[in-house]
Length: 394
Ligand SMILES: C[S@@+](CC[C@H](N)C(=O)[O-])C[C@H]1O[C@@H](n2cnc3c(N)ncnc32)[C@H](O)[C@@H]1O
Picture 1 (cartoon, rainbow, N blue to C red):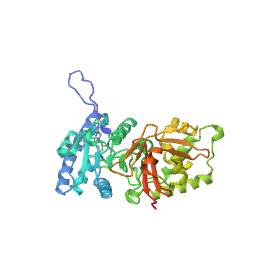
Picture 2: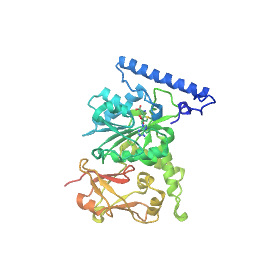
Picture 3: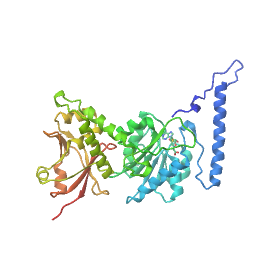
Picture 4: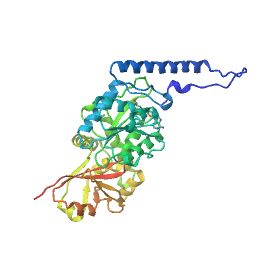
């Protein structure tokens, strides 16, 4: 994140050996000092108004604090999510303002702040030192422990987001996890590829004006909150994933006509409206129980699973090879079970649908004809997630 402040430079010493600053650098330095003293004044007047008092921004650490409306909106959304789950725990990665507002609105909010700036040690045991360059260098007690994660990475680079994504994967509790990412619009593509996130209409804003457009991305459908998910990206995401997959053998290429494209879009919109995180939902049939495999329709496999794979892996499936994946059964949220090694395999069928073969899961679950199951691909852990939604019992 670059601002005019980054242009400050000390020039080489002149003839008289006295270090001098260029007039441009001097102006920038004056501006910086004036901003620092403004921040201190604002912090004290904010305290007087019973607002949240923050430490001053340090631009060398890429610190840009949210304004009050943004901090309160995101904090209220997170507290809302907390109320919807059994054992909430919030990880605030590099977003100290959010942490401060969460605590102001609800002093008992179960939040942990992960920050590089040690001034936030003032929050005691709820502070954890975090450097994104060492994404998994965190206490083991934090591993897979957070169902709610909010992150605002310090830089708008691919490298930074990839490392923060590793941290998110480390922290995420298996099962349904809510992820909110606040970052520049330029990261939209990467946020979708790396973490399966989509932008909301709500636009985060900062106390200091920034040149970059900021966005809030979520991995769950916020409904009417946060201005809702923006609809347009969903369709272009599909078009992209479809076109990369139709690069297979020329004889097997399929054409996406305007008619079936709009039909697919409508169908997708219905899925998104109905389920916030379980994207593939179906009833198990007697044949599937006998064979120990679930058939996933062509469209849903492509849209909800293959779009997160590398082109090579998706191509192998397209070419008829079996692809082994890891799968979590998250039916019991507090005791998820992992099926790994060679026990879960996806393979394309003659009609382009895909079968998910997992005999061990069938044995463990003892499915009945008509039981309803849900599946989704979790891009953070690169695992398939399975959930038994309802059972038909005689
Ligand atoms: C863009 S700011 C996000 C702050 C957010 N807008 C707020 O108001 O809370 C980035 C944050 O990353 C932190 N940061 C800077 N360097 C870091 C590093 N190497 N590792 C992790 N976090 C870092 C900064 O201290 C800052 O709080």
